[in-house]
Length: 160
Image (cartoon, rainbow, N blue to C red):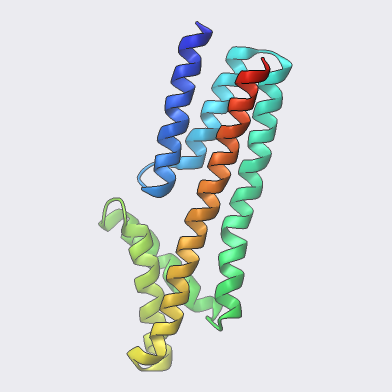
């Protein structure tokens, strides 16, 4: 049954990686869940080490995914409440517009908050552009994390 579990875990990891780029599914959570299932099925040191390394990568990736883009926004002069407005509208967008609503809502929230604060499109646009870059960096960081987790699993397959 190990071969079938390996294939199933590989498919779930692939779906999780797609979920990072197309935010419909909780991408990294699926990858981590697949590693957990694989570790339980293996029941040996290799399985648990793969899960441990994968969980550590997951945790570091989650922190970096928010800290690095947030720091870039702060360095660009975007106030924290503007970022908060982006997050709030992103949550609303997640439920209103399937697939891309979270990203669109975040960027729109930043734009509207900066427009209210600065009073013109020309003044609000640079902050909005920084928000778009932050979203891009967040996706890149999460995808890199997922790929590292998948690589950890692939190494575990080879080692066992």
